[in-house]
Length: 101
Image (tube, rainbow, N blue to C red; front, side, top):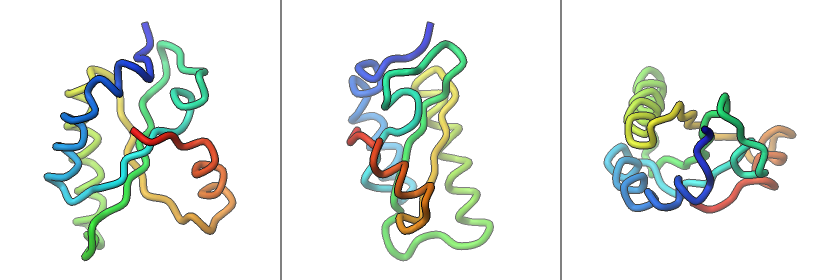
């Protein structure tokens, strides 16, 4: 059975604590879960921003990896965490469908 938007939002405070501990803020959900098309193969896509100064280089990728692992354990399903370029075509599309956590 796929995780639902309501199930993710029920864990909102725990998700925010994990994100804050790694310097991430402003979580938004996008992808199949946000548009109501999630199935049992779907992951949870979370768009974040990093507080300044944002991690750079290997620290940046390490922070995303740690967030994905911690949130996957918390939610019991695969989680993908990303930061986007809001001026890119794909970034604009994601922002249109993104839902606040």
